[in-house]
Length: 320
Ligand SMILES: [Zn+2]
Image (cartoon, rainbow, N blue to C red; front, side, top):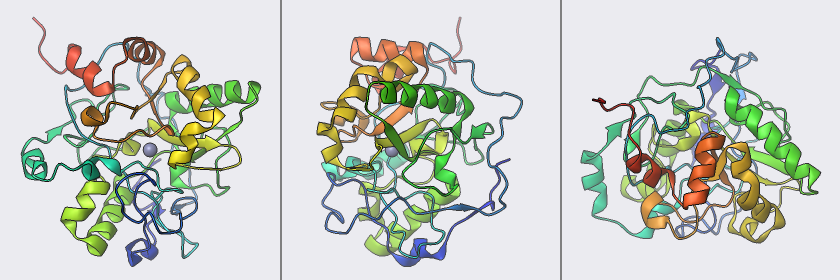
């Protein structure tokens, strides 16, 4: 099972080789060469990180559980230079997933302090609809206990931490990829799960390089990355082209995902035109599993997860 220490966060992480979010975002690092496939975290123990534990997957709630929440960003680290080729943080993304980036860059300077005061701890982090963003943080001790390695191609061969997803999401991803392939548009995963340790290491490396104020604008603090839920995955075309980069948005694969992802329970988490709500610019490659019912509702109503959670009746609130 998953355990800290299982993953070795390579020293390179702190070497400052990390790149930031996806190309579009803030002008950070755009100039740097896209580190290829994220950093690599290698399963230290060789042991599987995620074994379904007691089939604890969520019951696929069709209504929001967890918290109400709001704005924010899930920021993830962009890429990690896999410079050293060896272990690194599982996090960095290949093309530096935009994950992570945008939010801050959209210019909300003074907001940082205020946000720090408005951080809420996600009440039900294991909920499939859990909202994790800049203002909603996963509990410090949270670690999904049902991570598995989806049987889908990734842009790398190694058995890295970032291949894993929670069981239900992994199974849905397999169906999604199979359907895309059937339609002639084979996909590949770029980065999925990221542990708190990985996120912390990535964030720390950014702070070291750019200072906290700057780092917080393009990278998520530990606990705030949606990838830590094991329910998010960055995908790209099977040829790896435009992985986690804006150019993916004009590819047929992106269009296909936009039209079909919800049928398998995934949403394009950071859609166009919702930047002020999600805190992120459009990230056509970042998919978040929320379950089929919820995904269909979100798409049908044109809602972001933030909007949906605020509208719904949070299970965490007393019902009378
Ligand atoms: Zn992502």
